[in-house]
Amino acid sequence: MYYELRTYTIKPTRLGDWLSLYKSAALAVQQEHLGNLVGFFTTEIGEVNQVVHIWAYTSLDDRMARRNAMAADPRWQDFARQNKELDAVVTLESRLLRPTDFSPLK
Image (tube, rainbow, N blue to C red; front, side):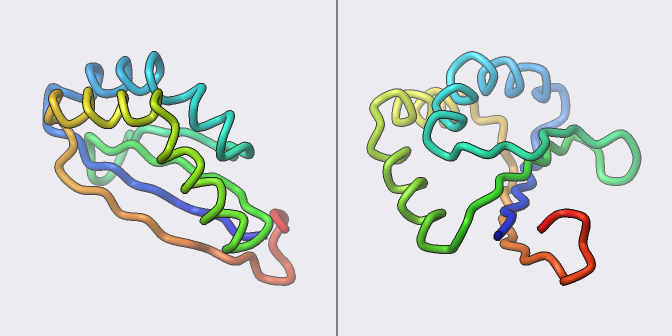
């Protein structure tokens, strides 16, 4: 299993707007295509105005196939357009993680 940890830094005062857009236009599409949402968070302490979400994949090929299918979905393309217009995202960092043999998540 592989886990993708995605961290978005959002412009100050735009976090609520971005979360509303994501919830209404992107969440269902991602759940349909990507499948296994492990968690979705906002930061409380540390670097603020960040959204962190984690998705699980059976393999790197599984991740690529799922993300390519999502990218071709007109609903995802509409979200991408709205997201660009909102202009709230400052940075995106994506990490692919593989659990250790003693991790509770496998």
